[in-house]
Length: 283
Image (cartoon, rainbow, N blue to C red; front, side, top):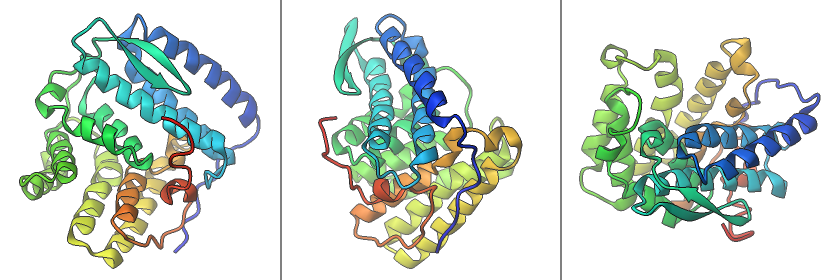
């Protein structure tokens, strides 16, 4: 089944990408003194990854894989900084080590945890996935911002799935139940139902070992992603929407579990889904 990506302007893409990349690396250097920048740096890294996918929708260029890895590294560095007990830590971001100031706990919220975990899944970074899954959900609650309860159940469900903990089923059910519009207090309904819920549904089918239903639900997830990111012009012009990160990440887990993915879409870059670039260079 093929699901085409929505139209996205490509004029001046190379110039825009070059400017954003320069600004991004300046912000990375700033993390040496200012861990409060982490949320913005992670968001920018994901945006840059999307911008690479503008002209490389199948991710068959090394530069696109580098952008994906860089975003993953920023996400991991955020949570390493939040856990650190020393003044600074050394983290690889890009192709070199960077000094990062400790103290990012206020930015270590559940939303950023999900982004970091999805990126680690796509990059097949098992060690980083395990480290993220060992980050206590109780510490996520200490971060800035007020989030709906379901997101903490969802984080704990993913942690239990990856670490093979017995509470996986109960936490996943609680997370799904918590996305009921009647239970939401803070998050917009369309974002929860079209972006947050679909990966939960996919993980359910993966846990059941139901490859056929997984692919059926993946097609729905990609369609919902498209609907969400084309709801208005501002969203449609946001590069983040060019990749369905959550569905892609769970699909990468499914590929590793032996599933064959039959849904084809630029929202699920082919070479990322297949893990074609894994181990190309030290990460």
